[in-house]
Length: 90
Length: 305
Image 1 (cartoon, rainbow over the protein chains, first blue to last red):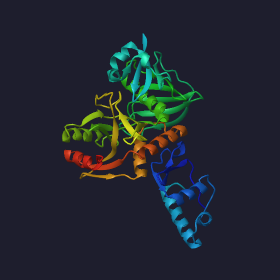
Image 2: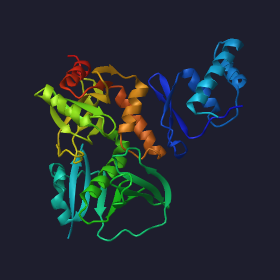
Image 3: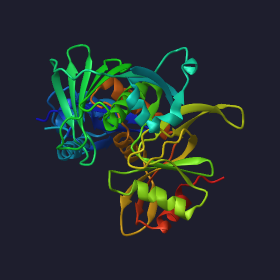
Image 4: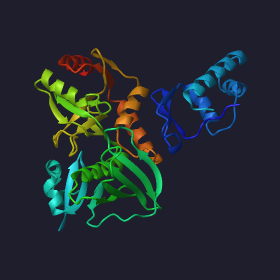
Protein backbone atom coordinates (compact mmCIF):
# COMPACT_ATOMS: atom_id res chain seq x y z
CA UNK A 1 0.00 0.00 0.00
CA UNK A 2 1.08 3.60 -0.68
CA UNK A 3 0.31 6.82 1.13
CA UNK A 4 0.59 10.44 0.04
CA UNK A 5 3.30 12.48 1.74
CA UNK A 6 1.94 15.51 3.56
CA UNK A 7 2.68 19.19 3.03
CA UNK A 8 1.82 19.48 -0.65
CA UNK A 9 -0.70 21.80 -2.19
CA UNK A 10 -2.56 21.13 -5.44
CA UNK A 11 -3.24 24.30 -7.40
CA UNK A 12 -5.01 24.87 -10.72
CA UNK A 13 -2.97 26.57 -13.43
CA UNK A 14 -4.56 27.11 -16.83
CA UNK A 15 -6.18 23.78 -17.75
CA UNK A 16 -3.66 21.77 -15.72
CA UNK A 17 -2.74 21.42 -12.05
CA UNK A 18 0.54 21.78 -10.22
CA UNK A 19 1.52 20.10 -6.99
CA UNK A 20 3.97 22.12 -4.94
CA UNK A 21 5.65 21.66 -1.57
CA UNK A 22 4.42 24.70 0.33
CA UNK A 23 5.04 23.85 3.94
CA UNK A 24 7.80 23.33 6.46
CA UNK A 25 7.61 19.55 5.90
CA UNK A 26 8.36 20.03 2.22
CA UNK A 27 10.63 23.07 2.40
CA UNK A 28 13.44 21.13 0.71
CA UNK A 29 11.15 19.68 -1.96
CA UNK A 30 12.57 21.64 -4.84
CA UNK A 31 10.35 20.29 -7.57
CA UNK A 32 6.94 20.99 -8.95
CA UNK A 33 4.75 18.21 -10.30
CA UNK A 34 2.31 18.93 -13.09
CA UNK A 35 -0.90 16.91 -13.20
CA UNK A 36 -3.68 16.64 -15.72
CA UNK A 37 -7.34 16.64 -14.64
CA UNK A 38 -7.38 12.88 -14.06
CA UNK A 39 -4.21 12.72 -11.98
CA UNK A 40 -5.39 15.73 -9.97
CA UNK A 41 -8.70 13.99 -9.30
CA UNK A 42 -6.88 10.90 -7.99
CA UNK A 43 -4.49 12.97 -5.89
CA UNK A 44 -7.35 14.82 -4.20
CA UNK A 45 -8.86 11.45 -3.23
CA UNK A 46 -5.67 10.21 -1.54
CA UNK A 47 -4.04 13.49 -0.41
CA UNK A 48 -5.15 13.20 3.20
CA UNK A 49 -3.05 10.07 3.67
CA UNK A 50 -5.51 7.20 3.22
CA UNK A 51 -3.51 4.11 2.15
CA UNK A 52 -4.10 3.13 -1.48
CA UNK A 53 -2.90 0.74 -4.15
CA UNK A 54 -3.49 0.39 -7.89
CA UNK A 55 -6.80 -1.42 -7.24
CA UNK A 56 -8.09 1.48 -5.16
CA UNK A 57 -7.06 4.06 -7.78
CA UNK A 58 -8.66 1.94 -10.51
CA UNK A 59 -11.92 1.94 -8.50
CA UNK A 60 -11.73 5.72 -8.24
CA UNK A 61 -11.09 6.07 -11.97
CA UNK A 62 -14.06 3.85 -12.83
CA UNK A 63 -16.34 5.86 -10.52
CA UNK A 64 -15.54 9.01 -12.47
CA UNK A 65 -14.63 7.98 -16.01
CA UNK A 66 -15.95 5.59 -18.68
CA UNK A 67 -12.98 3.25 -18.69
CA UNK A 68 -12.41 -0.51 -18.65
CA UNK A 69 -11.04 -2.21 -15.51
CA UNK A 70 -7.97 -3.26 -17.47
CA UNK A 71 -7.25 0.26 -18.70
CA UNK A 72 -7.95 1.79 -15.27
CA UNK A 73 -5.53 -0.62 -13.60
CA UNK A 74 -2.80 0.05 -16.15
CA UNK A 75 -3.21 3.82 -15.74
CA UNK A 76 -3.22 3.48 -11.95
CA UNK A 77 0.00 1.48 -11.90
CA UNK A 78 1.66 4.05 -14.14
CA UNK A 79 0.41 6.86 -11.89
CA UNK A 80 1.81 5.19 -8.77
CA UNK A 81 5.20 4.70 -10.44
CA UNK A 82 5.27 8.35 -11.48
CA UNK A 83 4.33 9.55 -8.00
CA UNK A 84 6.90 7.28 -6.32
CA UNK A 85 9.73 8.52 -8.52
CA UNK A 86 8.59 12.12 -7.98
CA UNK A 87 8.79 11.54 -4.21
CA UNK A 88 5.27 12.66 -3.39
CA UNK A 89 4.04 9.27 -2.08
CA UNK A 90 5.71 6.50 -0.12
CA UNK B 1 16.95 62.85 16.87
CA UNK B 2 14.62 60.37 15.20
CA UNK B 3 12.71 61.48 12.13
CA UNK B 4 9.93 59.93 10.08
CA UNK B 5 9.96 59.98 6.27
CA UNK B 6 7.51 58.64 3.70
CA UNK B 7 8.30 56.80 0.49
CA UNK B 8 6.15 55.72 -2.46
CA UNK B 9 7.42 52.62 -4.26
CA UNK B 10 5.24 51.08 -7.01
CA UNK B 11 2.32 53.22 -5.73
CA UNK B 12 2.56 51.72 -2.20
CA UNK B 13 3.48 54.21 0.55
CA UNK B 14 5.51 53.25 3.61
CA UNK B 15 7.27 55.13 6.39
CA UNK B 16 10.72 54.82 7.91
CA UNK B 17 11.50 56.22 11.35
CA UNK B 18 15.21 56.49 11.93
CA UNK B 19 18.00 58.67 13.34
CA UNK B 20 18.73 61.69 11.15
CA UNK B 21 22.26 60.48 10.43
CA UNK B 22 20.93 57.33 8.77
CA UNK B 23 18.65 59.28 6.39
CA UNK B 24 21.71 61.17 5.18
CA UNK B 25 23.08 57.86 3.88
CA UNK B 26 19.79 56.65 2.35
CA UNK B 27 20.34 58.35 -1.02
CA UNK B 28 18.83 55.33 -2.81
CA UNK B 29 15.45 56.24 -1.24
CA UNK B 30 15.47 59.90 -2.23
CA UNK B 31 13.76 59.50 -5.64
CA UNK B 32 10.85 57.84 -3.81
CA UNK B 33 10.46 60.41 -1.00
CA UNK B 34 7.03 62.05 -0.69
CA UNK B 35 5.80 64.82 1.64
CA UNK B 36 3.62 63.79 4.57
CA UNK B 37 0.53 65.47 3.09
CA UNK B 38 0.65 63.03 0.16
CA UNK B 39 0.28 60.00 2.43
CA UNK B 40 -2.96 58.29 1.31
CA UNK B 41 -6.08 58.38 3.49
CA UNK B 42 -6.27 54.59 3.65
CA UNK B 43 -2.91 54.56 5.35
CA UNK B 44 0.53 53.09 4.93
CA UNK B 45 1.53 49.76 3.47
CA UNK B 46 3.81 49.41 6.51
CA UNK B 47 5.88 51.45 8.94
CA UNK B 48 9.45 50.52 9.76
CA UNK B 49 11.09 51.86 12.90
CA UNK B 50 14.86 51.77 13.36
CA UNK B 51 15.36 51.16 17.08
CA UNK B 52 18.07 53.01 19.01
CA UNK B 53 18.41 50.34 21.68
CA UNK B 54 20.24 47.05 21.33
CA UNK B 55 18.39 43.85 20.45
CA UNK B 56 17.31 41.84 23.53
CA UNK B 57 16.69 38.12 23.05
CA UNK B 58 13.04 37.11 23.37
CA UNK B 59 11.37 33.72 23.48
CA UNK B 60 10.97 32.47 19.90
CA UNK B 61 10.17 29.28 18.05
CA UNK B 62 12.59 28.68 15.15
CA UNK B 63 10.79 28.09 11.86
CA UNK B 64 13.52 27.72 9.25
CA UNK B 65 16.67 29.29 7.84
CA UNK B 66 16.69 30.56 4.28
CA UNK B 67 20.08 29.91 2.67
CA UNK B 68 18.76 29.12 -0.77
CA UNK B 69 21.45 31.00 -2.64
CA UNK B 70 25.12 31.31 -1.63
CA UNK B 71 25.35 34.96 -2.63
CA UNK B 72 22.13 35.96 -0.89
CA UNK B 73 21.76 36.99 2.75
CA UNK B 74 21.05 34.23 5.26
CA UNK B 75 17.73 34.79 6.97
CA UNK B 76 16.81 32.90 10.16
CA UNK B 77 13.04 32.93 10.55
CA UNK B 78 11.30 32.44 13.92
CA UNK B 79 7.89 33.08 15.41
CA UNK B 80 7.51 35.31 18.47
CA UNK B 81 4.72 33.76 20.55
CA UNK B 82 1.47 35.07 18.98
CA UNK B 83 2.73 38.54 18.20
CA UNK B 84 4.60 38.11 14.95
CA UNK B 85 7.81 37.09 13.25
CA UNK B 86 11.48 37.52 13.95
CA UNK B 87 14.03 37.63 11.11
CA UNK B 88 17.75 37.51 11.92
CA UNK B 89 19.66 38.58 8.81
CA UNK B 90 23.32 37.98 7.96
CA UNK B 91 25.00 39.38 4.82
CA UNK B 92 26.10 35.93 3.58
CA UNK B 93 25.62 32.28 4.34
CA UNK B 94 28.33 32.02 7.04
CA UNK B 95 28.48 35.62 8.29
CA UNK B 96 27.40 36.89 11.71
CA UNK B 97 23.87 38.22 12.19
CA UNK B 98 23.82 41.93 11.25
CA UNK B 99 20.30 42.79 12.34
CA UNK B 100 17.08 41.56 13.90
CA UNK B 101 13.73 42.51 12.40
CA UNK B 102 10.51 42.07 14.39
CA UNK B 103 7.45 42.10 12.15
CA UNK B 104 3.83 42.10 13.32
CA UNK B 105 1.66 39.19 12.15
CA UNK B 106 -0.18 41.43 9.66
CA UNK B 107 3.20 42.73 8.33
CA UNK B 108 2.07 46.35 8.82
CA UNK B 109 4.61 47.24 11.50
CA UNK B 110 8.27 46.37 11.85
CA UNK B 111 11.09 47.21 14.22
CA UNK B 112 14.70 46.98 13.13
CA UNK B 113 17.57 46.37 15.59
CA UNK B 114 20.99 46.80 14.01
CA UNK B 115 24.41 45.79 15.32
CA UNK B 116 25.88 48.99 13.85
CA UNK B 117 23.68 52.07 14.02
CA UNK B 118 24.35 53.17 10.43
CA UNK B 119 24.06 49.84 8.67
CA UNK B 120 22.45 50.61 5.31
CA UNK B 121 22.60 46.90 4.36
CA UNK B 122 20.39 46.08 7.34
CA UNK B 123 17.94 48.88 6.62
CA UNK B 124 17.64 47.90 2.94
CA UNK B 125 17.09 44.27 3.80
CA UNK B 126 14.48 45.07 6.41
CA UNK B 127 12.62 47.42 4.09
CA UNK B 128 12.70 44.92 1.22
CA UNK B 129 11.56 42.06 3.43
CA UNK B 130 8.64 43.95 4.93
CA UNK B 131 7.70 45.51 1.59
CA UNK B 132 7.43 42.07 -0.03
CA UNK B 133 5.37 40.64 2.84
CA UNK B 134 3.04 43.63 3.25
CA UNK B 135 2.34 44.06 -0.47
CA UNK B 136 1.82 40.38 -1.35
CA UNK B 137 -1.94 40.53 -0.79
CA UNK B 138 -2.21 43.54 -3.15
CA UNK B 139 -1.26 41.63 -6.32
CA UNK B 140 2.30 42.92 -5.98
CA UNK B 141 5.54 40.95 -6.37
CA UNK B 142 9.02 42.05 -5.36
CA UNK B 143 11.21 40.33 -7.91
CA UNK B 144 14.83 39.28 -8.09
CA UNK B 145 15.49 40.42 -11.66
CA UNK B 146 17.16 42.97 -13.89
CA UNK B 147 14.79 45.01 -16.04
CA UNK B 148 15.31 47.09 -19.18
CA UNK B 149 12.77 49.28 -20.95
CA UNK B 150 12.61 49.39 -24.74
CA UNK B 151 9.94 51.14 -26.83
CA UNK B 152 7.91 51.77 -23.68
CA UNK B 153 7.79 48.14 -22.50
CA UNK B 154 9.68 46.58 -19.58
CA UNK B 155 11.53 43.26 -19.97
CA UNK B 156 12.50 41.35 -16.83
CA UNK B 157 15.49 38.99 -16.82
CA UNK B 158 15.41 36.27 -14.16
CA UNK B 159 18.05 33.81 -13.04
CA UNK B 160 19.99 32.75 -9.99
CA UNK B 161 22.85 34.96 -8.83
CA UNK B 162 25.68 34.68 -11.32
CA UNK B 163 23.66 33.63 -14.38
CA UNK B 164 24.14 37.01 -16.00
CA UNK B 165 20.96 39.04 -15.46
CA UNK B 166 22.90 42.30 -15.22
CA UNK B 167 25.12 41.31 -18.12
CA UNK B 168 22.15 40.55 -20.36
CA UNK B 169 20.52 43.86 -19.38
CA UNK B 170 23.76 45.64 -20.36
CA UNK B 171 23.89 43.73 -23.68
CA UNK B 172 20.39 45.01 -24.51
CA UNK B 173 21.60 48.56 -23.96
CA UNK B 174 24.55 47.91 -26.27
CA UNK B 175 22.45 46.24 -28.96
CA UNK B 176 19.61 48.78 -28.77
CA UNK B 177 20.64 52.39 -28.04
CA UNK B 178 17.03 53.24 -27.08
CA UNK B 179 16.93 50.58 -24.32
CA UNK B 180 17.60 51.71 -20.74
CA UNK B 181 18.00 50.06 -17.33
CA UNK B 182 15.02 50.50 -15.00
CA UNK B 183 16.42 48.38 -12.14
CA UNK B 184 19.27 45.88 -11.84
CA UNK B 185 18.17 43.58 -9.03
CA UNK B 186 14.83 44.21 -7.27
CA UNK B 187 12.04 45.68 -9.39
CA UNK B 188 8.41 45.51 -8.26
CA UNK B 189 5.67 44.14 -10.53
CA UNK B 190 1.93 44.70 -10.05
CA UNK B 191 -1.21 43.31 -11.66
CA UNK B 192 -3.33 46.34 -12.59
CA UNK B 193 -6.33 47.25 -14.72
CA UNK B 194 -6.46 49.63 -17.66
CA UNK B 195 -8.97 50.63 -20.31
CA UNK B 196 -8.25 48.92 -23.62
CA UNK B 197 -8.60 50.60 -27.03
CA UNK B 198 -12.09 49.14 -27.44
CA UNK B 199 -13.24 50.64 -24.12
CA UNK B 200 -13.28 47.42 -22.08
CA UNK B 201 -11.26 46.93 -18.92
CA UNK B 202 -8.28 44.61 -19.18
CA UNK B 203 -5.67 43.41 -16.74
CA UNK B 204 -1.98 44.02 -17.33
CA UNK B 205 1.30 43.85 -15.46
CA UNK B 206 3.40 46.92 -14.72
CA UNK B 207 7.04 46.98 -13.58
CA UNK B 208 8.44 49.68 -11.29
CA UNK B 209 11.89 50.75 -10.20
CA UNK B 210 12.71 50.64 -6.48
CA UNK B 211 15.26 51.88 -3.92
CA UNK B 212 16.87 48.43 -4.11
CA UNK B 213 19.03 47.51 -7.06
CA UNK B 214 21.80 45.19 -5.85
CA UNK B 215 25.31 46.36 -6.63
CA UNK B 216 24.23 48.77 -9.37
CA UNK B 217 23.13 52.21 -8.16
CA UNK B 218 19.99 52.44 -10.33
CA UNK B 219 17.18 53.85 -8.20
CA UNK B 220 14.67 55.09 -10.75
CA UNK B 221 11.17 56.11 -9.70
CA UNK B 222 9.77 55.14 -13.12
CA UNK B 223 7.60 52.34 -14.47
CA UNK B 224 6.45 50.64 -17.67
CA UNK B 225 3.97 47.96 -18.76
CA UNK B 226 5.69 44.57 -18.87
CA UNK B 227 6.48 43.26 -22.37
CA UNK B 228 7.79 39.88 -21.25
CA UNK B 229 9.72 37.99 -18.60
CA UNK B 230 12.80 35.96 -19.57
CA UNK B 231 14.50 33.24 -17.52
CA UNK B 232 18.19 33.15 -18.47
CA UNK B 233 20.53 30.17 -18.61
CA UNK B 234 24.16 30.23 -19.67
CA UNK B 235 24.64 28.07 -22.77
CA UNK B 236 26.96 27.69 -25.78
CA UNK B 237 24.28 29.20 -28.07
CA UNK B 238 21.57 31.84 -28.20
CA UNK B 239 18.07 30.43 -28.34
CA UNK B 240 14.74 31.64 -26.92
CA UNK B 241 11.50 29.71 -26.43
CA UNK B 242 8.18 30.47 -24.80
CA UNK B 243 7.55 28.61 -21.55
CA UNK B 244 4.48 26.58 -20.68
CA UNK B 245 2.47 27.72 -17.67
CA UNK B 246 3.92 25.34 -15.02
CA UNK B 247 7.52 26.26 -15.86
CA UNK B 248 6.65 29.94 -16.06
CA UNK B 249 4.94 29.71 -12.67
CA UNK B 250 7.93 27.98 -11.08
CA UNK B 251 10.42 30.56 -12.33
CA UNK B 252 8.32 33.57 -11.34
CA UNK B 253 7.61 32.11 -7.89
CA UNK B 254 11.27 31.31 -7.22
CA UNK B 255 12.24 34.87 -8.22
CA UNK B 256 9.55 36.55 -6.10
CA UNK B 257 10.19 37.48 -2.46
CA UNK B 258 7.77 36.31 0.17
CA UNK B 259 7.30 34.23 3.28
CA UNK B 260 6.45 31.12 1.31
CA UNK B 261 5.83 28.90 4.33
CA UNK B 262 2.97 31.16 5.44
CA UNK B 263 -0.17 29.65 3.87
CA UNK B 264 -2.06 32.93 3.40
CA UNK B 265 0.95 34.59 1.77
CA UNK B 266 1.52 31.58 -0.47
CA UNK B 267 -2.14 31.75 -1.52
CA UNK B 268 -1.65 35.43 -2.37
CA UNK B 269 1.55 34.80 -4.36
CA UNK B 270 -0.09 31.95 -6.27
CA UNK B 271 -3.18 34.04 -7.04
CA UNK B 272 -1.09 36.97 -8.26
CA UNK B 273 1.24 34.87 -10.41
CA UNK B 274 -1.56 32.76 -11.92
CA UNK B 275 -3.47 35.91 -12.95
CA UNK B 276 -0.30 37.59 -14.25
CA UNK B 277 0.51 34.59 -16.42
CA UNK B 278 -2.80 35.04 -18.22
CA UNK B 279 -1.58 38.40 -19.58
CA UNK B 280 2.23 38.23 -19.36
CA UNK B 281 4.37 35.94 -21.56
CA UNK B 282 7.36 34.17 -20.00
CA UNK B 283 10.30 32.89 -22.06
CA UNK B 284 13.47 30.91 -21.52
CA UNK B 285 16.70 32.13 -23.10
CA UNK B 286 19.79 30.00 -23.53
CA UNK B 287 22.46 32.60 -24.01
CA UNK B 288 26.08 33.55 -24.49
CA UNK B 289 27.33 36.83 -23.02
CA UNK B 290 27.25 38.61 -26.42
CA UNK B 291 25.09 41.26 -28.10
CA UNK B 292 23.70 38.60 -30.46
CA UNK B 293 21.97 37.15 -27.35
CA UNK B 294 20.14 40.44 -26.88
CA UNK B 295 19.05 40.44 -30.55
CA UNK B 296 17.90 36.80 -30.51
CA UNK B 297 16.05 37.47 -27.27
CA UNK B 298 14.38 40.67 -28.52
CA UNK B 299 13.39 39.06 -31.86
CA UNK B 300 11.49 36.36 -29.97
CA UNK B 301 9.97 38.27 -27.05
CA UNK B 302 9.08 41.69 -28.48
CA UNK B 303 5.26 41.76 -28.90
CA UNK B 304 4.15 42.01 -32.54
CA UNK B 305 2.32 45.21 -33.42
